[in-house]
Amino acid sequence: MTTSGSDVETAPRPSPSLRTEALEQLLTERGLVDPSVMDKFIANYETNVGPLNGAKVVAKAWTDPEYRKRLLDEGTSAIKELGFAGPQGEHIVVVENTPTLHNVTVCTLCSCYPWPVLGLPPSWYKDPAYRARVVREPRAVLAEMGLDLADDVEIVVRDSSSEVRWLVLPERPAGTEDLTEEELVPLITRDALVGVAKVQAPA
Amino acid sequence: MTTTAPLAIDGPAAPPRSNGELVFAEPWEGRAFGMAVSLHDAGAFAWERFQAALIRRIAAWEAGHPEGECWSYYTQWLAALEDVLTADGTVAEGEVAARAHALAERPAGYDHEDHDDHAGHGHGHGH
Image (tube, each protein chain N blue to C red):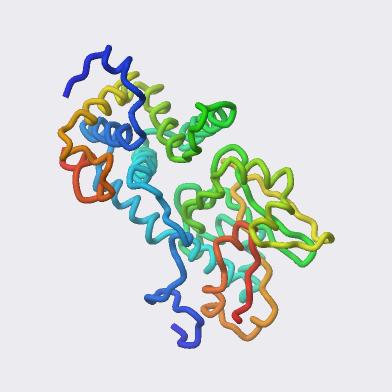
């Protein structure tokens, strides 16, 4: 498995798939990564950690005023109370949407996102078009994503970074007053927690 | 667990846990993600270092890229990871490319570039 330097110089750049495999081999040979440990991380984010965690946080905030206050005052620790912590889970700040103020989150520089409560970001969140446009013309971007906001609703674009990862506390929809915390959870979508949708009451 | 909930939280009809779309579009994206996270977890680098490298890679792509090259977030992620590991000497300059070329020269049966079932074999397991 040796390749001469000149071959490398003239060959086309290998695909990311091959580069990934090559890097994993090199790191495994050096004892720096353990593929079975990697498997666990990958499986955890593919199947366990996702927006369901964020939905549980919001449902609790909607039904427990004391928790709501803690969540808005100190997001990271209130979220940890429910057992959700981990990489990209530090410095989570929760902002509340109201009938007159709508928060929407973005990471203009890369893809900062509160992994422990939302899982890994969807492809559109990482897309250069969303990251650039939602700052310049949030109302148009939200409308394209199916959220038409009245002209008198103020839109605040929250730019995430390593210092702050934003999570939106959406409005509890009318008609859900009689639902329990457990019944509210399935209504709360990932998009509502990013701020590109509202939570809808069950039909 | 209530029986009147529109959807069970933990049952078979549970709401999507994976954002309603595949978390990783291709298997190598998951491997690239898993490598960075497990290296960081093992203390190989501070997350801020990786994040700064990722920001530089994304900014460079947005400032200019080959005509017709599609945006791929995990391609930038992988490049950022290589940047961090090359800068600290964990891998040598050109080493990843050399190994990748060697892998590309495997007999056709072992080249899973065109396969979609990476998970079952190869990709460095068992070394």
